[in-house]
Amino acid sequence: MTHSSNSEHVAVFGLGYVGCVTAACLAHLGHRVTGIDRDELKVRNVENGRAPFYEPGLEELVRDSVAGGRLTATMSHEDGLRDADIALLCVGTPSERNGNLGLGQLRHVISEIAGQLPGRTKPLIVAVRSTVFPGTCEEVVEPALRGHAGVTLVSNPEFLREGCAVRDFMEPSLVVAGGASRPSVERVAALYDALDVQPCLVSLRTAEMIKYACNAFHAVKVSFANEIGALCGQLEIDAGEVMNTLCQDVRLNISRAYLKPGFAFGGSCLPKDLRALNYRAGRMDLHLPMLSSVLRSNTEHLNRAIQAVLDIPASRIGVVGLAFKENTDDLRESPVVTLLEHLIGKGRDVRVYDPHIRLDSIYGSNRNFILAAIPHIGRLLDGSLEALLAWAGHLVVTQRLSAEMNAQVNASGIPVLDLAGSGAPAPTVSASSHG
Ligand SMILES: NC(=O)c1ccc[n+]([C@@H]2O[C@H](COP(=O)([O-])OP(=O)(O)OC[C@H]3O[C@@H](n4cnc5c(N)ncnc54)[C@H](O)[C@@H]3O)[C@@H](O)[C@H]2O)c1
Image (cartoon, rainbow, N blue to C red; front, side, top):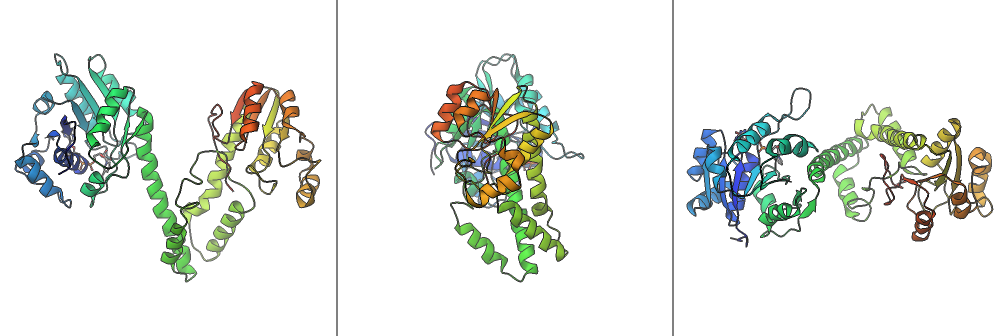
């Protein structure tokens, strides 16, 4: 057994899939754990050293931990909380009819805990492990605990998968703890010290959001693979071979690439190829709702950016970056062109600078494209960043800037709306240079 160096008294509220696995695994790591549930059967099972449901490896952990005196169970919130340093809330948050999250179990357990706090002298960290929408800890949990000295709040979402939950706990891919009190966040993260993982310490809302981002990402990945699979099926292509090969690319495909919130995508490939794929799928009567909504999603993102720029009160708007991403002079399907056309259409005074697109130095098809297809944009081009900075009352950055350009922009003191997510003051939208 791998024992944790800092053994804590932990009260685990809810002995369902998440709670029971968490309780048994933390006890296995050497913490003293009490599981609390309103379901008598679950409590009796754990008390008797049995897992209350089937999960590979759980029965042995519960049996050994109960026999070793590190795990007990009770229906009494009072008994469960008495010695606890940390209360881990693992109650259910099921869907309501309208899709919203049901917080009934959480509210109930919080009010039970709050009822135990008057007169308590021992500090308590309340850590929410249930999946809750960002803001729930601040808006629902914190007000119920407010006014009780020594009580702090942490979000510590769970990422285990049923069917391999014990292994996921013992070999975590991610441990996240977030909250306003750094010592409390560190103490919750230290529960997992014995495991081979570097915990991510974040803010309360970020911790809550990460869980949703992860689950949404998993769902999107499954649907993506299935839609590609369906298309492959129609085309008599081995879908497994396609996806396995896709996964071989760990630089662009299975990587951080394209996963940074930023500006809308554009360029000569992504929009064109998505259009062709959807058109050909449609011709085969194949409905691919996810793939066919990607361009609409991109347009929505561009519309948010356009609105954010239109909301700028300054009269002279300087746009930095005209191509769909940095380090190219390719203007095909650049979302910046659409952005500029909206600004022109609304009568805004706008100029643009791109280090790789200057009418005095650009040549070939790109120069012809500017002069023939978008002459109205060509007329807005400035020859240097200095000229743009000397003129603009507000800047809109659409690409990741070089260090030198970034320094010039910062030194200018001109307010910046950074659509590229490159670290300048954040707007309500962001996007990145994909294409
Ligand atoms: N199941 C998963 O794979 C999984 C993975 C990660 C996160 N989550 C999240 O973790 C949370 C728990 O999920 P679960 O699948 O373990 O739920 P579950 O329904 O299996 O377990 C919830 C437990 O809480 C108990 N409970 C409810 N109210 C209580 C109260 N007032 N006092 C004491 N006990 C109470 C219930 O009796 C039940 O045993 C949810 O928010 C879920 O979204 C689940």
